[in-house]
Image (cartoon, rainbow, N blue to C red; front, top):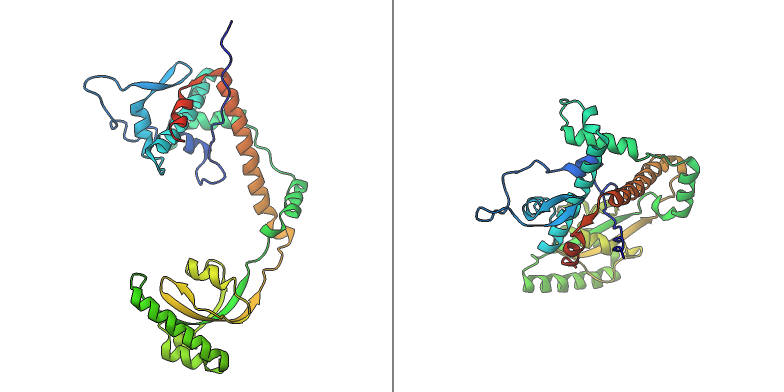
Length: 302
């Protein structure tokens, strides 16, 4: 009775979240530091990872790990092993089809990299999304296609370093006193900013102008965009200290017209489709070239 066929696994190629081409991702660092890596005393490094009849040694994996930083060495090793498996699958298919003979040296591109680019151009269909596809995505994701929300803010910064416990306690206490006074006399905000603020904006009455999300310090940004119109009832804390904040205006981002985002949607959907096509192509290669040892490496990373 024959052995059961191993389950095909997904071998992700980063496309959407990477600025590199597929061939660059598959071949990055292949020739870098070829003379480095772990060595044994006169013996070849062991190999527990195989693609077809090709062995990928622990020395190969260790060299590749430096390009796959992760929270643990086991995760870095698994990421490196996957990258090497992808590269070897593509290399074997290039050799089977004789594509290296169709690539000329020169032009600043390595023969192996050019061969894989040719392989993917030939074997993986590059399908463009239709306008209907784009309109459907636009209609289903309205929240993604709006101009940024923005607010107009004044503030008074009571500065205190993050590691100064007493200083931050005093800053918060002073901010609370200023808020209590401003609730009764809001017209004093400009005067208080000039007298008490540790921000250069004090010369402008604490004016920060119009802010969009992401323009201010992250922790300040997160809090002020949750505030309602008017004087905040509590001090807003940031790495710089405590802020007395007044929101003078709030503008919700307007919906962007389809024509304004059509190209952005088309580019995104094209990358998604290509990602799926590449994944299916790699799974097909695994039917031709058996991958062994990757399951165990990945299991050690979980």
